[in-house]
Structure formats: C-alpha cells, structure tokens
Image (tube, rainbow, N blue to C red):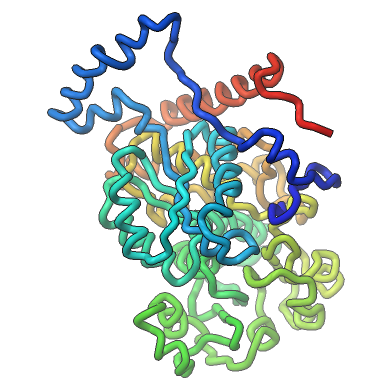
Length: 444
C-alpha cells in the first residue's frame, strides 16, 4: 500500500480527502457504562482514589485497574517514514494512526500513536522511558538506521514491558515464515541453501539474525549494500563499526567464499534472494536471476514497486516469488505479524519479545498456510485470513511462558481463547458501529 499520496482500494485510487473527511482514523471510547453523571463518582472522583492508593502500594495492580495491560505506544520520530524519508514526526502521524487501526482490528490491541519531535537517540530513549508507565508495550516504527538498533536494544534492556521494532522484527518474522514454506515446496533445507541478501537496512539486519536462529548458515549468506558485497575487507564499514556494529558483524560472519563485487556477484549461484532495498523496477536484473540455482526463491520486498517484477523473475527461472504487495501472490507483510505478536505478549504480560518468540510466530504463520495447502503462489497466509492472528498470538504467548518471561501463567488453550474472543469481539464492534451509522460511509 503506497500511503505517500494514495491508499489503494482494489484497483481504485482513494484520494487524501478520505483522511480529511474523518479527521483522523482513531478515537477513544469508554468501555464502562455511563448511565448519568453520577457514575463519574465511581469512575473518577471520589471512587477512583482507593484504586490509586492500591496501585501506589502494589504497582502491579495497575494491570488490574487500568487499560495499561492492553495499551501500547506506536513511537516514531518520522526519520524513515514509508518511502518518504525523514519527513518529521507530525507528517508521520497519519501512518501511525493507520498502524493503530491494524493493531485494533487484527489484534484487539489499543495502540496509541506517539510521534516524537526529537531525533537524537538518547533523547528518544529518555522520552519513551518517561511515558512508559502508561503503556503495556512499545512498538517502534519508521526510525532510521543505525539508530533504530541502538534505541531498540536500550529500551529492551531498560524497560520491563515488551519493546518491538516492527521494521526489524516484524518484517524478519514474515520473511522467515514465507521462506520456511518456500523451502518445503522446492525440497531444500535452510541449513544448506545459499542466500543472497540485497539491502542492509533495519529489515534485512533483523532477517539475517532470525535466519541464523532458524538454522541458516551465515557463511552461505551473501549480503550487499549500495557499495557492494559485505566482507571483512570493507574498510569503509570497519571505520564505522562503532556507529553501526551490526553491519560490521555481518561483514565478519557472512560471505564465507569472500565474494567481491555487487548485486550480480551476490546473487549468482544462490538458492534464495531476499531483497529489501530501494523501489524498482529494474533494481535487480532478469539475467542475475537466471544465474541462480534451480528452483530459485525470490523475495523482492521493496514498496511500492518491488526490485524486480514478479513475472520477470519467473521468466528468468525463479520458481517461487514473493513481494510486499497485496496485488501479487505471496505478499510478505509484517501486518501478518505484529497484531498477533502483541496480542500474545500482552495476554500473558510478557516482559519482552525475544527472537525465540519471533521464531514461534514465524512457524505459526508457516503452519497455518501449510494446513490450508501450500502452493507456489501460496506460501504465507493472506491478510484476509483473519483466523491466523489468534494462532500467532497463541504461539507467542506459549513461548513467553516457556521462557519464563510471562507474568501471567496460562495454558495454550486459554491464550487462544482470550485472543480469539478479543479479536472477534473487536471486529464485531467495529462492524456494528458502521451498521448503526456511528462510523459514517466514506465519500465517493
């Protein structure tokens, strides 16, 4: 979906006036009864005072008495918003509102857009920590590299609530899920395949880490940035290793063949290509795909236009192709991931979201698709298959309990029941508000 100028509805282009018509996409509504002003003596003063004292004496009671247990902040500084670059916090607000809609509709999570007019990482960390008592989790969004890595790691270590960067963990989880099933179809093992990775931004750095956790051999990965293949002789990256240690670590761990060159050299003789770089087309050439191994898998994830058109990749010999777009088969989209991940983490009150929990989410996605019948054009669930979100939530919640990271011990069946009930109830509420006219019909 290209939100820079238009949002897509089918093949129509919906102009920005839709956003202006609603004056924003989210609002706050009460979930307790207000039968008259006298009820405020319960919900506000004086009735609320006893609740405040209980929380002051036992801070964990905040999860019993407030909506903290189900509320997250969607935090951005606007430094890397969609394909628009550094447009600042205020201009990023429409995107964060859209994200909040997805959180609510697909995960029954109350997500609050929190755009920060500050781009220094230390100050962003300070601000998020200061407001964290209001929230049960933090979703970092559209923050530029390399500071996004530093901010995520600091907040994960310094807060006792789950902190997640969707551009990293969400995209990596969806990519791994698609790859698990694509490899099943072509009959290859993740530990054996050679993987070309184009782009070393937030998504692919996390993808490399998650691929390793899933069993992929880093020495069989060939990673390329705008200046060429990564390897230990990249002096330019060694000089910046204190600023971007993640990229330098990739130089040291990958490319066991010590290939040099650019994209063509990275792609040649590989089984899998994962590109998350700049919008295409023609960023990746057909003739490079033709040099891949038999039964090649190509994920071209740039939006709004993939690095190579799917039909061109197929013509060049790729057997399975995925993109980030909903109008092509095999959409690899982090929206399949984050609603369920946070639903599961919040339900068991997890203190963090780990790579093991991401692996559990990826396998839940892959298993769901496999049960429905895998095919070359169906390796990952579709966004319309809403039954997948409770499955992801359950996998994440169960893993958090197994890892000892959950403050609420729940069985698998209990987690699924809570997730399914909350998500379905939310969708019924939204539908009813629309049917009753409280959500108005959009303009033509």
